[in-house]
Image (tube, rainbow, N blue to C red; front, side, top):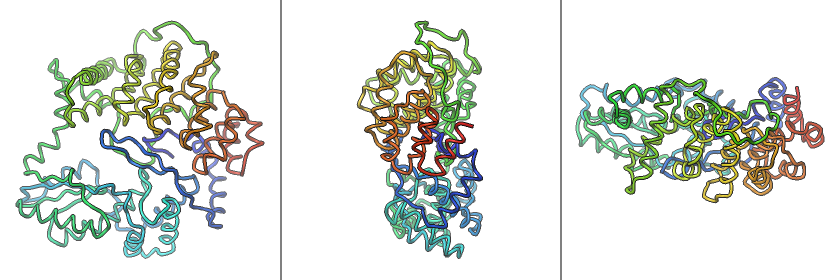
Length: 503
């Protein structure tokens, strides 16, 4: 239903409760070929390496995409559609007998440049499922707006991407090279440096035949020993940051116990956003107290110590005048991502005071920053008061991307409404009226949870945001004003959302 890069869609969670009726409705749409509209493109911050485009599809397109790929995948060779675990992929070169060198590389902007014609031909060669493949290629062209590219951060796209790149893997194998792939990442084990060079040249040539290019900045050849050392370098460096009392390994491991992962996986739930919770709570008064809890709730004390240490490391590094090495910055970001939810649950407020700086300097952590706000808000009314005031200050800034603003709007909607007015409520309304579809719809959902829907502001957004986001705006109206929702419901699908919300 969602992925870790975007907030949960409560409209789709509501429809999950009406799965049988939704299935019937969508089957009729598919039979009439009422499918395939251009996806909404959202640019997501990627650490310090630019942005990645992700495609938000409407529910019918998303369901059909998954169904067609699942059907085709049943006829695919299992070694192609079933990826090995990432850890096994990274260690695989060390198992190759006689390998003295390991080369690693990947493809530049891989999912952006998958050619639909070549993909369709490969799928048909592997499966013979021509009718399903034709339907899939037609859907992809409509969704992507061109005959190229796959929607990013979707499990179905991962399957198609693995099929597409496997052509290169097989050609390298037939040329005598030991090679394995994980998505568009390659590992090639060779007995000599000259063989490694030939392997990379062959790899570059073969990916070009698919209309792709290797990423030169991520292409390296290691000796076997150096490659083995590189596998543990990140973890060792993480532990070194904590090495203040001789217990670095245990302290760092406490953050990993949180279960956070940096890996991008499709259809995993965004952790602890409250979009699927009760639509709204009773408004409360802002309070002046500065503390809510005397001790952290639902958090191990040692985890809190580890999380605070990660915060201190980040705070110390950002005060340095010189630019941090890329690896050190990446390590600190990884630790902070794990630490923020713990800090929120423990009632630790220093990140709240640095929220603007956090968002500006660590834009890729916007989902975790949102989670921190939500967890902190759960600790009590004075924390929620502090959050509301911080949000009032935050929304006047102009340095955040649309994607970051989506997460700010999501966070704002999860903090119980105050009886007195806050300027970030005005900001949410302005976003509904004027912003891009993703931000407008998320802001409408936030206003719905807060019980602050204004019909003259939110209702026009139903037709403005497009089919990918319309149902989220309708959900916002339904949770706040069921009578208005009945009046403006466009079809049976929206009436099912209303039934789910009011039942």
